[in-house]
Image (tube, rainbow, N blue to C red; front, side):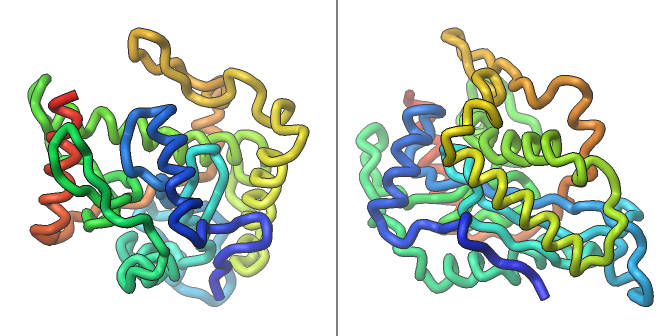
Length: 273
């Protein structure tokens, strides 16, 4: 059994709610039509009894996977917890209800909208890293190294900036909730509920009057007037090294022509800015 959401985690159900997320992303990171950032992490657990290699991952640890989508306000809006570590990383996302709804176009996204700078309609999308598939609704970086000033280099730069929200959320959760700082001495079923509790507490604290205590000014990565990234406080004190999170593996995948064309439109937009 995998856990797929809870009362503190709500994915938008109307075009207007998606547009509100997109508006904040654009105001903060200047990435148009972005409605969230997704990522996944293996969370290390001790070897479960009588499971063989079921939870054995590519890093030679035992783990379960936390897949999440985060909005521009640093809140979880979708989570799927519990995929066994042995499952291919593409398979983790493919078997979520989010993937199914994206494929069946059941997320009530806004209609594709014109980007005046390029004179083309562009869909609303999630941002992801190289571990995820490139689709009409999921933008990922161009692979490889690209020369400064190229459309690919500029696209990758802007995507990386906007994706920092999900990186920050994972970092803060693992830094604050100490149970995530080392392998969990729990069976997978119990570990899932502990992780879900941490996720819900994060959302609760972010939306409560205590948000400035939980995430005081300077917690998140910021950008100065020159465009330089100022690391958030959660990165201090070796918090990255203390986390039991392991990045999901990058696996090459075939990409549709439509998805490549959508990414090219965004790349052209940033090149012309």
